[in-house]
Image (cartoon, rainbow, N blue to C red; front, side):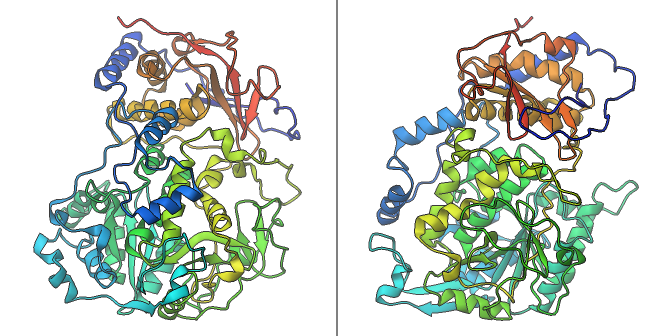
Length: 625
């Protein structure tokens, strides 16, 4: 069973009073050993080791682009021996075949989504929108789409203008830069909640720019759910109520609802398919945020247009939410290249604290003119440059196929092909004790901001581009950040399990443990799967089954050398994974492996990293009955 308990703070972290969260409830009934063994048997039965590797299924064919990408990433990029070795070493095989790229829906069979002309992007996304029934293949033929051609911004480039400010060896831009007037938004994990800022901002903007700019919401909700909401009357209770609300909202404002899996399929997969699948499998807000970080680049690279977070504002006369003007803690120890002096007006919540000030507004006041200006800009793309120094990834505007976005994708993919500690080569972030009235900042220690959320810093540095050189989206797009991906201050709540059978959830847990084992030097990261286990009807049986089976499901990886079983919450309580006795008996916490996740830290048998505690341990291999 998982409980939240309090423990002394780790060395080096300022102490603070800790609320007593220990549960006084009577202990739950002991798990049935037979049930745990049967569940473990089922886990073993559906696995197939070592499984397909995570090597990308689609490789670039442009030799000039590939050569340039290798210069800026690593020489073995898209060479089979290197890619296979990296994928096996850091991600491992897909032993349950859960990371397979989905097949194309019938209506998209034969449609080349990777070479779609920009003026056909809006009509195609509109016709495959789940606000309507599935189209016929004939509806998506080029001639049929051309009848509803979307608006675009174009700019003719000659000579040096095609170099987009890069050296000779960089791939040139096409002779004509064309950007479709499409705004892409993303909401993953559940239906977009009614009444939040995304709902208001996109709805208002879509109505305001009707006929000029198309607005799209990318979702992982399958088409069948929307079809069911259309044809079945509401019930009590009504599990389809959020889907009905989303459908009505999109139809009212003319917003296209597009399913991710329908578009990024076997014939046109994501470059980041495996990282996207790994993040989606965790089913917690931080992982959905990481998946969104990937998807936004994939979407703009594939189709062109503007990606914009749902908490951004598109209308100059829209008043900023009250939170934007309330200020907050000064922004401290920001990432290199994005420091800014505190201002004195509105607040913009960043990864660490808040930036006080207003964004530089040198751009047009309307979206169509912003598309025009970026198309004609020297670099041919832009991000959300709040100032000359502060650049965020909550807005990305570019034509499809821009080389900068191709480099971004490869940088993101490489961040999944190395040790988690390597992401913090400059040292682990320092955790400061919060000042009076200051927002707690322990969440900044999460891997998500470093692995995916700040990758654009690396991109701009590799390209030698500064925020001063980018077209600033304001005032056509103005900033506000709700940080909706953050967990509650008391820790990650249980993840609801809609399936009465725990097997699918445990399959996801094994996938996550295998990946964490490889990226954390043999660590058994129990804290990573704890929210999933907590959401099951019988967590104790699930923990026991998981550890009973994991030894057999990791024989291709090697022996477990450590266990991570507690996490510091934002409110300074400690979330401790307390295993049932049957599962605890499978861990040898007296083991002394020569190397483990914290063996080089010189901190003894306790290693604290990103607010989590790791100790050396071995997993005892259980004998299946």
